[in-house]
Length: 517
Image (cartoon, rainbow, N blue to C red; front, side, top):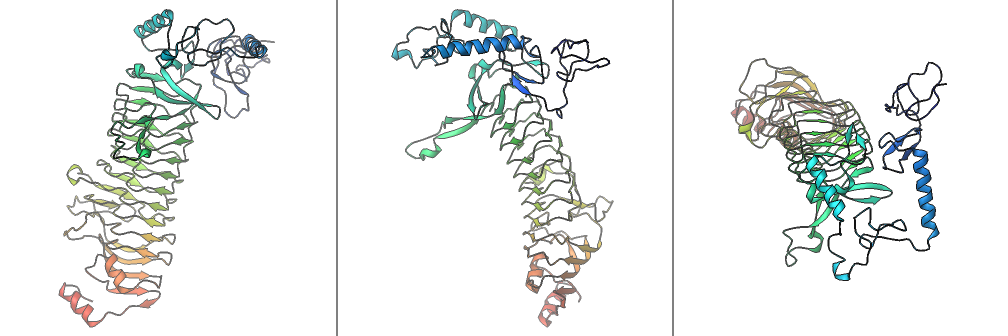
C-alpha cells in the first residue's frame, strides 16, 4: 500500500489525493484541504506555523514533527527539573540551562548593571552581522514559513502581545518601516494597534484621558505597497493600516470577522478590495478617503454599512446584496464619480446624506437610483442626495433627454410607499437645497401608508404632487404643505379616509401662485 510522501498516510489503491494533507499522490508538497473536513489543528513545535490534518513533516519548515515533539517534551521536562527557571537577564525570556545568549533578544547572559538595564538590549556581533546581511539580500524572511507561497517577514520586525492565547501584532518596528512588502506570519490572529503619547499633549490644557492616541500597527507606513495576510487573521483593529498612502495590494482572508473603524482610511492608492464573505459589518470610515478605490464587491454576509464607510472613494457603480439592512450616514458621500446605485428590498434604513456631495463643481454626472423605495424600508435620513445635480429613479421611469434639471425622471401615475416605512427626514429626497429651478416630475397620486409616523420638512420638495392619500390620521394639512416644500397644497388631500376641504383663504393664496383647484 502506497504512502503519502508528505505526511506518511497510507493511501488506498486508486487514491490520487491524500485526505490528510491534500498532497497529490507521489508529490512532496502538501495541497489544499477542504475546510468541511473536521481535521485537527495544531502548531509546529519548531516554527509555530499552524498545521491542518495529520502530517509527518511540517509543511512550512519541513521538520520531522514526531522528533520535534519529542524535543519539545524533553525541553519541558528539563525545565520542570529546575526549581528556578533560568531567565534572560535582559528581557526575562526562559532559557535552556547552559544558554550563553538569549534567543529572543540576543543579550549575553551576564549580570547587567542597573544603570544599563533600561537601555537597548545587547545584541551579539554575530546576530548584528546576520541582520545586516539579510537587509542587503532583500526582504527579510523566517526560517521557511510561507503565506500564499511567500516567505514570512520575521517576528523580529514586529512588536506583539498575547491576548487570550492569541498573538496580536501591535506595531511594525521603526527600522523595518521602509519595507515595501510585508508577509504577516501565520502565528498572528489579530492585526492590532498600540498607544503613544499624543505629540501635542499639554498637561496644563489637556485632560489626562487625552494623553495617549491610538496608533495602528502599520499606520502611516508610506513605503508599504503590498501586504499578504495569512488565513489565521480574525480581526483587523482600529486604524491598523490608516494612512498607508502607497498601499496597492492587500488580501483579506475569509477568516476575518471584524474590521474596525478607520482600518484602511486614507489608503490613497488602493484600487480594488475584496471584502471577505465572513464580514457582517463594514465599520465607521473603514475605507474613507481611499481616493482611487474603484472596485468593491459587497458580499451577501454584510448586513450594515457604517457611517462614512466609503466616503470620498472613486466608486462608480454600487449593487448591494439582498442581506443589507442599513446604509449609514455619509456612507457614500463625496463619491463624485458614482453614477449607478441599486438598493435591495431588504434595506430598512438609509442614513443622512448617504449619497450627498459637498462640492458641486466636482460632480458632472447623473446619479441613477434603482429601487429607491425598497419593500422593507423603514427610515430615510436627511438630504440623501444633497448637492447632487441630477437623479434618475430607474424603477419609476426616466427621460432619455439630457435635461438640465436636477430631477430627471418621467411623470409618475401612482407612487405607493412601502408599508414598512416609518420615517422620512427633512429634505430627504430633495437634491439641491433652495433651488429655484422648475420641477419636471409630477406624481399624480402619492399614497403614504399608516406605518409612516413622521415626514420632515421639504421631504418631497423635488416632486410636484396632485393627489396625496395619507392613511395615518395623525397628519394635518400643515404637515402636508411642509413636506411638499411649503409652496403649495395638492389638488386633493385625503387623511385617514377623510377628504380635507380647503378654506377660501387657502384657495386665494394658491391661486395667486398660479395654481387652480
